[in-house]
Amino acid sequence: MFKISALMSAVVLAGCVAPPQEPAPAPAPASVQVECGVASPPGCREPAVAPVYTDWAAKMKAETQAADELRQRAVEAMASLPPKQRIEHSETLTTEQAFVSPQAKAPHNVQVLDSVVIDLPWAAKSRQEHKDAMTAIKDIATLMADNRGSATIYVTVSPRDLRAKKVNLKSGTAPTEAGNPVEVKKSADKNVAPGIEHFVIQAKPWPGRLD
Image (cartoon, rainbow, N blue to C red; front, side):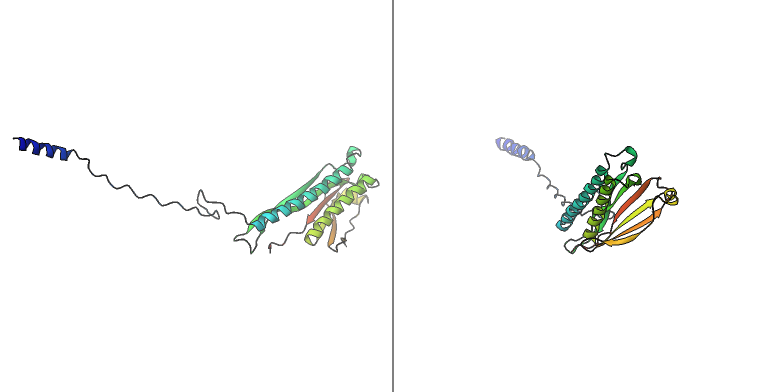
């Protein structure tokens, strides 16, 4: 009887043993982020910007700041004149240009100086303040031409002022001291208010390749 009881106890104890655990699932493979591009998947990794592009972007920012300081100098030159003889509208414009470099795997867009716009009242032409503003405009064109090889100054006037012979459309080209050409192109446009010479100092685009 004792043997049977002992045997039964052994059977019961054997039945209480915990079943073997199922093997843990294999860890999911780590996701690989691809660099962003055309039709990129969500969560893609933005590619690192090559040093050649960051250095170039810093130079472009410095050029834009220099041109903007000259624009402000033109505005300040006429700020003490009567309201109708002051510069009421001026702006420094930038654009995005694509660059490529053998030092980088992909092209990169950089913000660059495009042009400077100044509306100059011709009523103050006989005053030194107007001459100082014109000097600043020429300095902007010189900065662009010497940096990029050439620049253009577009001057647009009102047809009414042209008919009254208050302004002329004399155009031409003159070199900077460094020998780079600055071309002046004049025209009339009904969208320009009488009494205003609308200046657009246009920078020549940079070559798209950075060596």
